[in-house]
Image (cartoon, rainbow, N blue to C red; front, top):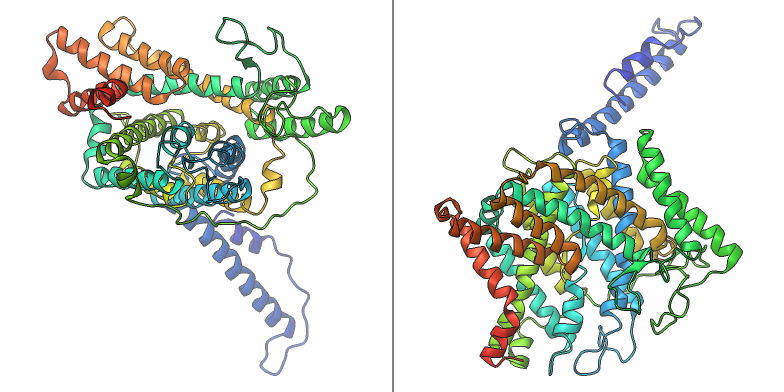
Length: 533
């Protein structure tokens, strides 16, 4: 409600009929009317004040947004990344540590507990990002990082899940120290603007391939080619129809300037998926062991109305970490190298994501830096440590937030909405599982397109920036790693400046970061040279 609405309501009120005056000389109805009017006016004023307070706090008008856009953006972001509540348990909850125990210390997986804690940490940290940093950025367990923790750390000889999560906590605390000392922000600002643009474009292609692959439109074939279209080179199965329907529906709504196109596309595709599953009993692609038995089935969730709408969350994983256990289990050198690997991946994935979101939402300044960057990085660092402390792996900024930004989100209010939905998801896990990959992933492809349009801002006839930008862009989707693309771009940029006699134009921190990336890329040879397993 705007400020003028209470006054407008007063001026539009019909006059009351005259009545007999009371003992004080004032009519009874007038007294009641005056009292009601006063109460209504006060209530309206309070409502207007509250709405304006929210608008001012989140700078909604300043960023040329509306509360409605923020709400829609938060919803879209949640739906496009809610899969992590289901997927993270399948990655870290089904893997035994070196002692033969599953996450949580049991002899059998407890996926419901992992899901509940995953949603809890994502909700709390995303709300914190919205309130503290006022940035439309959601956080959750980092894909890739969780796989590294599960398959590259917890399974090492003598390592337990508690030891592995202790390393994640240490990594998050180290990054927090780097933020508080200003080092992380300095690195952020040392990166040339066009390389930041290349990072955004690369991430756009990265989330596009994620969307196409998760939906089954692009698959890994049995033959010699790395990927193929659908099954055997053809689109097959009703889930593919749902994806195509969702993609085209969003495109049609976008070209007709329909607000909420992405959200409507996800909802419409989910409804279609539920109907198709009810009619044809399509089923899942995989069986209980994860083996593909139905190539034309649903990729992750089977869309159907659940029998149980509520589930009591189990937060038993909270606090199950051993801060220094890994040092005793595998030695100081191995533990330090693992922390370094985690830290470097987390450090630059976040940088790329934050810039990409800012680019998409036109939130960056003239140097391609987002507002309140220090606050953003502090929250992100705390999220990494919080993920380890809750035994769900490092939490990090999610590029899927770009789907909400594409829907119009520009402030932290959208993050608060997404975070609250994650908290609800701890109780409503069955509802989260309604939305299949095929209904949510069209949003990622659309956002990838939007981010790809930034490529025009790169000076392609200047090879000193064009080659590093190209490597940054292509290596992200082709290696399935944001960090690999950023590292290749940084190292190449510094090298070309060096051979061109322009070494002094490179920021000293960029030299340092490039050297660290060389160590990162050569981590296996270094470990072999040091005799570390």
